[in-house]
Structures are given as structure tokens and as C-alpha cells.
Length: 207
Picture (cartoon, rainbow, N blue to C red):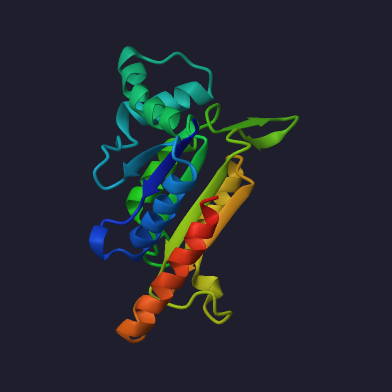
């Protein structure tokens, strides 16, 4: 039995295009992989520890090979728990809207917790930076109001660029993407057609 971790990046829930398409993926995935476990990480209800105080000091103590205080060690456990949940999954689904050309701050916060040396990547004089989350597949569902696949607006798309860059940095090579755009223009009929097309694409990624 494999484990799929679904990371939900939108706070809009029933009004979210990215979540609606992610749910179509999950419906198909459960049909195709009925024995697999699906875990949902809703970033808007998850308690993400602030990366300051004892946590940031613990990070630098680890990086520099220095001993941690008991308070730092205790605080770091919250980071390790989130990383462990992530790295123990066999497959991933991430849904996110575009905010200010990039991703919501809660998703960025989550990523800043995950991306730690010795846990999701390593660095050495011999190999340089090396991702440690390898041999796994991730499907990304992106929603955005504008048409950023248009070459005239492509430079503003920091959403897909950032997600692909950071996931490849920690070791992912097998990435599927489904893009829903533009969600803020067109008639209701056109928007529904756009959504249905994205749902069909997402189902094809669920194999």
C-alpha cells in the first residue's frame, strides 16, 4: 500500500478552482489505487511553527555542527514532524492558486520548513547540492486569474517557476502539471468548460 500526500494551498475551499481540480484527481486516484492511503495537509488549518526563536537557532546549530539547547531541540521536533510526514509519502499532489504572481504565503511557509539540509537536501564539496527526496512523483495543480502561458505574460509567472525549481532542488524529477487559466475572465460557460478540461487532465495524471 502506497501513501499519497495531498497538500492543499488555497483557503477558498468550495470556491477554489485548484481544489476542485485536485478533488477530481483524488476521485480518480482512489478508483485506480483503492488500497493506497491518502493524507490531506490543509495548510490553512495546519499549525505551522514560526521559523524564528529557538527553531531558527536550532537550524543554524545543526548547520554548523554545534550542540543545541534543550529548548532548541524541543522546538525543532515540530519541524522534523512536518518533514517526516512529507518524506514518508510515496506520491504527492499539490494544489495552489497564484497570489501576486507567485504562491500563497502559507505554502511558502510550509516549503521553508521542509527544505532543510540533511533532511530533504545535502551539500558537500564533492557533490554540491543534492536532493534527497528521490524516485517519487508529484502532480501540481495551478490556478491563476490571468493567462500566464501567453508569452507576453510568461515572465510574470513565478508560481510554476518557483514550485518546479524548489521541488527539483530537493530531488523530484517526475513532475506533472495541470494549469487552470484564466479564472477571472470569460463567461460562466467558458469558465466551466475550462474547469472541466482541467479536471480531465488531472484524472489522466492519477494513473
